[in-house]
Amino acid sequence: NAGVTQTPKFRILKIGQSMTLQCTQDMNHNYMYWYRQDPGMGLKLIYYSVGAGITDKGEVPNGYNVSRSTTEDFPLRLELAAPSQTSVYFCASRERQAYNSPLHFGNGTRLTVT
Amino acid sequence: GENVEQHPSTLSVQEGDSAVIKCTYSDSASNYFPWYKQELGKGPQLIIDIRSNVGEKKDQRIAVTLNKTAKHFSLHITETQPEDSAVYFCAASTLRKLTFGTGTRLQVTL
Image 1 (spheres, helix red, strand yellow):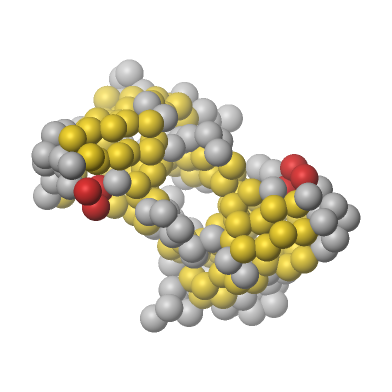
Image 2: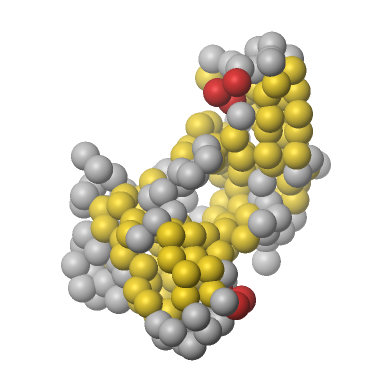
């Protein structure tokens, strides 16, 4: 099993450009998450999904959109990139919604907006 | 909301020594405390966790302790090895929300 796969690994955007960060998992997990990781700030939840067709906002959703058309895929969309969105983005999934079900993370996408 | 503080932000130890990372949390409803290890260029990976009804848990060279009264929990790594070098994140979870600490960069030197 590949687990959680994120593409691309690196990307540089100009201010105002848009892009989609791809995330796919092959574990048949219903629950998927997008986090951003900033230096000294830990991981902040952007959006999450409890199943195909269902998404909801996390702590820091402004400037982002998501969709969940299939169980496997959970893309994150940046419409008008801003320097504040420079970060490392992690997609994660878990088998159950139970609070003690471990998160499985992808290897991240490092995004720079200049 | 929940606030998780983690200290130190960086930690350097010699190979074979012990390392301790400490976290405090604010929400008394938190009842699950996982620790994640993030190696360079990778995503975080769960290494150990503890529930609120347990005071200590060990897995080979790593252990976690929890003091519910004081609202703090710690990760202990004994006999550190170079492959322990990574960023470690603590987290605290209620039934609804998982909150991460800010991370500790551990460097194990030869």
